[in-house]
Image (tube, rainbow over the protein chains, first blue to last red):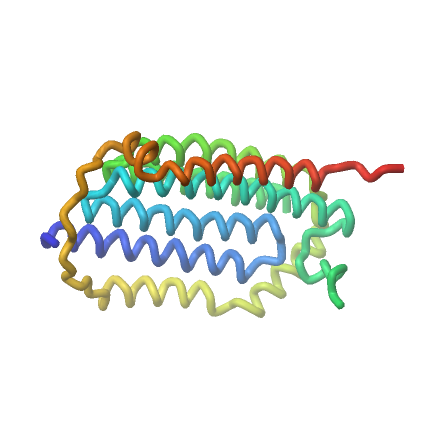
Length: 106
Length: 142
């Protein structure tokens, strides 16, 4: 790897790790299911950027792009269903606080 | 609460826009367009629709929640800042050898010839998502 690419990789990897920590913080610190989904979305964005960066550095941008397109499709389906589950939980419990959703507790 | 949630959603959309600019700079224009249209646009619409269907939290409960969160996770912002500083100071990149790029450099070729099973997977995922949403919003029979 050339020194320029290594430097670029270093900057991006710091950004990716900070993005991941932000997503994990968002999931851990909130008591709102929608905000937890936003945190998950930030984590997915970190992974997306990592895949694109790996494709750029290894010279396989096309492969990375095709994987990212699949990832985006999976992400949007997952988020739509997750938002549906949140609305379902709100409709049945009148709250989206995960501490109060104890219907499935045995 | 709703205003703060909307602010979070706008922040997420702006992150998506920044990410698509980075993707474009890293030589992935098609993925950047997908990220911009789907993640910044459609995802924000889904989140805002979800927020509009939920109820507003009262100010008293909001302040209690904020206090609880602060008491429980006061160390997390410091952890984020400290990890950022440590990473920028001590991160060393291993000098690994990169394999030679493959012949397929066109994303259309890769998607249709090399990764065509992914396309079937995407179709199945979309159908599963559509059926999942239909089942979740089904009205109970009388």
